Image (tube, rainbow, N blue to C red; front, side, top):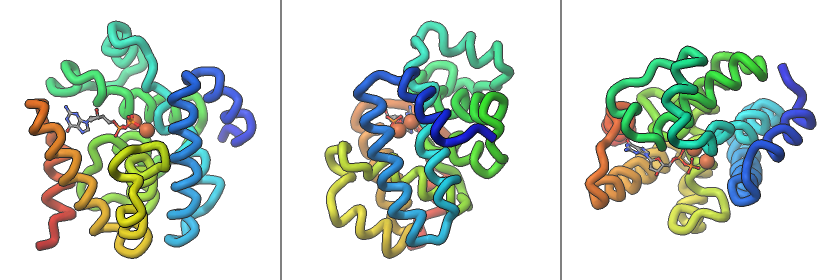
Length: 186
Ligand code: DGI
Ligand code: FE
Ligand code: FE
């Protein structure tokens, strides 16, 4: 597996300044959550650092790039470029950086979520949504919720995300809906 220091420089070169600032926010938040929930710090840092590695592949190239590296896309993913970056990123992390399956899945499901997520998957999903540069979800009450009851925070973010997507008439990916139902414990 690639060393954190080496990957840090690689990611810094690949991403724009804005996206790298977001990434540093995710690393910081993921470390906080990881400490509370007892996840290995180096693992958490590596996944947070690389979660958006494929975010800035030019839109017109993204579908072909996914095909070239052997990522299968469903119909929604083919037309929603936002959704491709997590799957493509996961494949890069597996093939190029030698990530374990659990780490790969944390990258793969960081945008949609899914049912029955591992602790590492939830930490990355929530760190991505609540890092300090985010507007709404970085508020203290959301961060506190994530620290006290991680499944409740999953539900909160999923509900908020789906609400936003509905308002914009966007399609909801099936994994997002499955995750919402799973973490809706009421
Ligand atoms: O990559 P980031 O911006 O850091 O965050 P992210 O990976 O959570 O991606 C956020 C984008 O993904 C945002 O524009 C909403 C979109 N998204 C998340 N779930 C769905 C979705 N888009 C569609 N169409 N359907 C979804 O279910
Ligand atoms: Fe992302
Ligand atoms: Fe992100």
